[in-house]
Amino acid sequence: MEVKLYDFPPHGDDRGQLIAIEAGKDLPFDVKRVYYIYDTLPGVRRGFHAHRNLQQILICVSGSCKIHLDNGFDTAEVLLDRPDLGLYISNDMWREMYDFSEGAVLLVLASQHYDEADYIRNYDAFIEMVRGKDETV
Ligand code: TYD
Image (cartoon, rainbow, N blue to C red; front, side):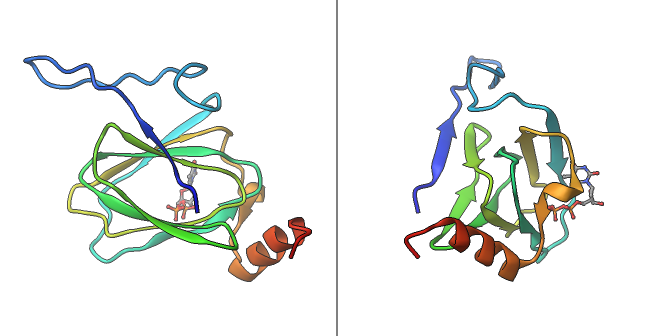
């Protein structure tokens, strides 16, 4: 599976690093929501859903974590371990987040407001939906 990563250029100087991300310029969508996941307990795996319409960029701004992606045909595992690295996740993509390091902070930029109706939380229903959309299968 082709994974879309963003390298955000750090504005580093002798004081340290700063990354700026501007909507309409550095991202493929306008950000309507920001949330972050932190204090994740050891061994926790979370996510286990896809979205009908939502697009997201995930950035592990502190520490590291791994993301499991599944488009219904292929899977990928992505390590997010740099604050200047963004992972784009389109709609219709099953995702699970795991292997959070101690102190990891996973920042998520989202294209839509929170809407429980946009979630697909049943894996079998997700597979049925994405494979049904592909007429070649
Ligand atoms: P949840 O969907 O379980 O998170 P994850 O995808 O990481 O497993 O969300 C945890 C709780 O937070 C749940 O009660 C819904 C709520 N929530 C919001 O209120 N707004 C949001 O933008 C998100 C992502 C979750």
